[in-house]
Picture 1: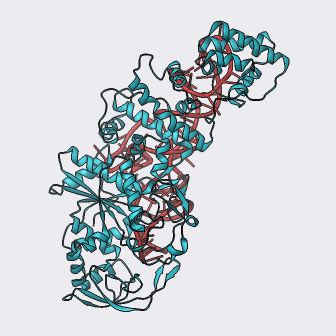
Picture 2: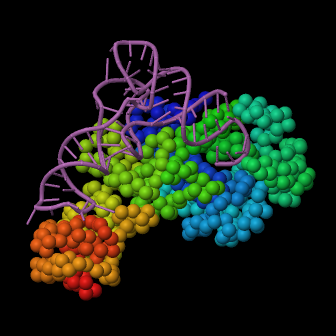
Length: 545
RNA sequence: GGGCCGAUAGCUCAGUCAGGGAGAGCGACGGCCUCUUAAGCCGUCGGUCGGGGGUUCAAAUCCCCCUCGGCCCGCCA
C-alpha cells in the first residue's frame, strides 16, 4: 500500500506541496487533475478544517505551476448523520453561540438523521448541513481559495452516485472480504449500506435484503450506537431505493474518488491509520481504480487544547482574520504538515514576524540557508498570489499594536515614520497597505490584554503628584510649548528635567504614563509624545485637560 | 494489547528522506542611541538533538528498546 506519511517526503523538495505534486505527476493523470478535500458539516468550521482546503490548495497551485489544469473539489459529507449535539454553533455572521441559544430540544429530536434532513437551527438555510456548509464555503472564500463544493447528499439524490452504490452492493461479498481485513466487526450479515427510514428519517444499518433488479434494499429501523449514546430506531421495516440512504464512510470515500475522478487528497492523521488503508484497498479491489495520491497532515491544537467542534474548543477563520492578515494565515499552512502545531493567540506576533522574515527571504533582503531560500521562492508566490515587484512595507506586529493606541491616522503615520518603519517619502497607497496591520494587531492586544494593550487616555486621568514632580511636569510643559522638540530631544529633556527638579527619573516617566495612558509603564515617552499635537501635550502635562 | 506521527536552545521552530560544521527568530544578558522605561541597532550566553543501546572512521539523521504528547485499530471525521 501507499504509506500516506511517505508521500511528500521521498524527494528532495524544499516545499512539501512540490513533493506531493511530483508524486501526482508520476502517475500521469489527465487534465483536469482533481484535488479533493472534505469534511462533514457537523458544526462550526474551525482552523483545523482549513487544512482540508489549504493543503489541497498548495498541491493544486504546485500542479498549476507545472502547467496542469486543476480542479479543487471539496465534498461536504452532509449525508452523514447528526450523531450528537455540538456544544457550540455559529450563525452565518460567525457569531459563535452556545447550544442554549437555539432550540436544542428540536435539534435533539433530529439525532440520527442526515445533516441535510435536519432543519437549520438558525432558520436561515435549507438544513443544518446547508448552514454549516455555507460557513465552510465562507471560510475558503475568506482565504481566497477557489473550491468546487460538492454535496454528498446531492451525489446520492441526483443519481451521480448510482453506479458506485450499485457496484458496491453488487459486489458486497468482495466488499465484506476486504473490509473484514481491516475491521473485526464485519461479519457475514454485513451489508455496506445505511437506509433512511421512511417513517422516522433515521439512517439504519440493519439491511435485511438487497434487490438490485429493483434497485432497493429492505431494512429494519433499529437502534444505532453513537459514541456512548444510543439513537433509538422506530422499529419500522420498509424498503428504500439506493438513493435513499448512504454508503458507510469507508466505502463512501472511495466511491467519491471514483465518481469524481480524484487524483490526490490530503487528509488528517486520523484517517491515515483507519479509513485510508481500507479505502485504498477498496479502490483497487472493488472499484478497480488506482486510489488518489494520499497526503497526511497532523492536527493543530489551540493553546494546547485539541480543536473540537463538539466540545466547543474552536477558533474560526473569521476570528483569526480579526488579528491576522490573509497572507499570514495562508503562510501558516505552508509549514510542514507532518508536525503537530499549536496555534496560540497569545503569541501570534511570532507567527507574523516569521511571515515577515519569510517574505524578506523571498525578496532577497535577508540571509537564509539554501533550503529556506528555496522554500520561500516556491511557497511565497502561492501564499500571496501575485508577488509585488517590491517588498511590501511591513510594520512589525508588536509595534503595529502600539500604534493601535490611537485612532488618529496622522499620529500613527508620524510614529511609524519616526520609528523608521515607514520611509518619509512613502506614498499614500504604501501607507494604507502598511497600516492595514494596525487594527488587527490592536484587536490582538485587546483580545489577549497583553502588554501592548494600552490606549491614549482621551480624558485627563485623575491623578495627583507631589510638589517636585508637579513642578517638573510644569517645566516639561514649558519646554514642549517653547521648543516643539523632536522625539530624541524630548526624551533627553525628560531626563534633564527630572534631574533639575531632583525627581527620580523613573518617577517622572511614571507620571507621564499615568497622565497619557493611565498606566505605570509604557513606550519610550519622547518618541511617544513628540509627534502628538503640541497643544494637547502641553495641556495634559499641566493637568488642564 | 498492536500500529502510526511527533519530541532539536528558556519559547516557537528549520535541519532527519541522501550520516560528516548543531542552526534561526524571539526571550535573557551586555552594549549603543546625551537617556534604566515595552519600537531600532550591535554583541554575548544558551542545546546530554526526549532516554538507553547498536551499526559506522563518523549518528539529530540509520537499526532496536523505552518515556512522553497526539492519533488509529468500534462509530464519526
